[in-house]
Picture (spheres, rainbow, N blue to C red):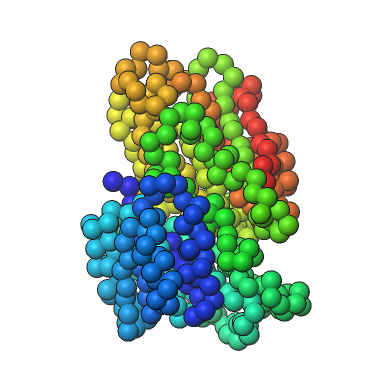
Length: 386
């Protein structure tokens, strides 16, 4: 079983964390199982909404202490309970207190290394612009803590002057760190920014669905027109001849390592590989397809400098309707890819505002994403879709 992605949402009491979660739920696909681990007494009405939501499959609470401090030892037990009892597709940890929960992030990483059951997807801090007075601490310790923050969501900015909002940006800028930030739309942020692409969001899809999933995830949203905080690039890389090729994984890793976190927020992709790719922690994610001499498809999820590869179910005959490889397409290295003809790479890049055109040009100029054969006739397409 793939590791369960964990998203940490933190911020001071009343900043809008629960509202952010409530606005995320309708954006999730039907049947997606989301579990919530809370570390505060919440408003009973909101908690009832969460509990009654069909998308919330389980709620655990750690009370009477700070999850970043004296309750950190109970985190493993709480996560394991959710994993066994609920079997969620994702766990969200909602906590108050420290704006930058380095201890909590490190504990999730430790549990992931030791058990293999969990993986940290992102740490999100919600800031209430209306009631926030700024960061008084810009010390080395504060900067060290801030390194474990991946995304800052500025909430309730609609109720203040532009000067007040700029003050918030300036104080965050004083930390001199590459931390992505977006403004919410009355407590709503697009799913694609908050969550990475996990196996549950891509499972049970035929080839046609996989071809459209990444593009459709960020389909044009008219409700966000007036204040789009992110831009989206859709990329495909495909061979032009009769022989299918995998992606150059070494070149892809170089791209992932060099992507600046303040310009690129998330990278999500379906990748064809002729050998197992490695996640940012160095672990290879080997698909059983390789053992059968076939190339394999992987889900790539890059978030704020970290990335994972997760094997995707074999797409034989377009939707696993047959186990035969009689019509499989050969790869240049002798492997075969058991599916109808598809791009070797289908990627979505979510960038900061005003960054998409620059990265689109860089990708199309070559040298960042290529087939493993470096075939000059390959078809590389990059299109800004939002």
